[in-house]
Amino acid sequence: MVLFTLFLAVPIGYTVYLALHRTRVSGLGLGKGARREVYVGFENFAAALADAELWAGWLRVLGYGTLVLVVMLGLALLFALLLDSARVRLARFSRIAIFLPYAVPGVAATLLWGFLYLPSLSPIRDVLDVDFLSATTVTYSMANVAVWGGTGFNMLALYTTLRAIPPRPVRGRPPRRRVRAADRDPGEDPDADPGDHPDHGVLDHRDRPGVHRAHRAAPADQHHQLHVEPADEGLPRRVRHRRPVLGRRHLDRHRGDRARAVLRVPARGPRPRLRGGLMAPLTVSHRRPRTGRTAGLVPTALLLIGALYCLFPVVWVLIAATKSPGELFSTSTLAFGTGFLDNVGELFAYRDGVFWLWAANTLLYAGGGALLSTAVSAVSGYALAKYRFPGRALIFNLLIGGILVPSVVLAVPQYLLFSKVGLADSHWAVLLPQILNPYGIYLARVYATASVPDSLLEAGRIDGAGEWLLMRRVALPLMVPGMVTIFLFQFVAIWNNFLLPFIMLGDDGKFPLTVGLYTLLAAGANQPALYNLILTGAFLSILPLIALFLTMQRYWKTDLSSGAVK
Image 1: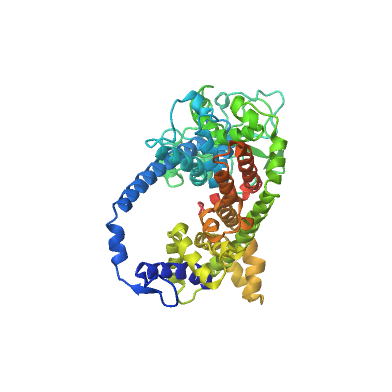
Image 2: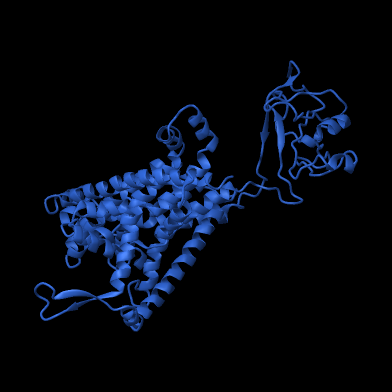
């Protein structure tokens, strides 16, 4: 609650205060008392609402946001449905490729697509004769960068939700289920049609799991006792759903909505071996219906097109980073060069190795901020989930409201507040505001509610464990997958953060990679010789996040899918 007050409530309150006041300057504005804050009520709001440029900007943001959301969510849903399809191929490769742009920092993504829009460097301009940076197309070019970076995350969230939905048979077309004895006779044809064997053996589902007993009662009596439906002998390789063998009144009260597995034992040939009245181990195979080889070509092709769209800028910047300054403009845009090591050496030597300093600062901000934020989020979420105290609902609702506050709104008042206490232009000015993460606290609360049973905590209290020991030895180990997800979210958010360090810092020795690459781009705007350093720096800046996601994606996928299952 203290962090919420310091880094969220106080900046919002200070913003409201500044909006209701105006600085009045007397004389030349020099000397004590020449500048003073005067309460003006809603005059600032009236002046802002009377500005035509403000309304025009709102309309542009509304159109841009609508375009990005519709296209991004539409593509994410399409790719999630394709990945969930049983006919698609190369699903794992496509899923990783489409998700990969989420690991690319926003500034690096802007640099990649910015160079791809240039006629002299872009292979796209060789195919499409379109000016992507004209007044009529620049909005769509910006939207493309946002769609490229955000589609993968939304696709993964939708895909894990789809995977959590239990499969249900279509009415009239139940799923094929075939039960085979593990000890099949070597001389028996493994592809023999079950319909060719008229005799049935029946499984007794009343025994303990994993053990099936063979009974020698008559088939009709077994069906009556075990409530197992026989298969239709006239339909090969298919179990007919809800076909009555005895009277409908006799069987209907025992039938569920799902098809039941039936063991078919051949009338000829050896029977499954019995050991002490126990049948040999059985395996159940759920085979996909046989379709033509071309049935999955269209969904696979669509998925590969999406993967190519997401991978192309990353592959292109890798190719461009290998070219020397002379090769960058003279060779084919998709041909590798010979100057990668020279580019890396020049980048590391640029301004006495300032790139290494930017990388170290980024690691400090992202790593340290993500660790502190994960610890605060885990403890806060656990407390909100497992303890009852006055004001708990109010605190949680305030945190949910904090999720809706854009970080851009808080950056300027936070800078003004840090300037008053002398922390501006320091590492703390970037690190401290990142500790509080309302969305991380929300995720931790949800995960603690689902993964930490109250009965386990009560058992620990009965054994004499204190609350701190319960949280440290019982709750937090169970919350590790959720904590990994929070860490990844916050690490990526801090690594990609540009506006906060850009406002807070003035010394380029404290810049992170995002601001450093921006200054390098600004310096190279009129110096094409620096393009190689910019491209090489952009490529190196995305490697750590890509490696992090590839190594930790299994934890993230597990956590996303576990939250969708009751």
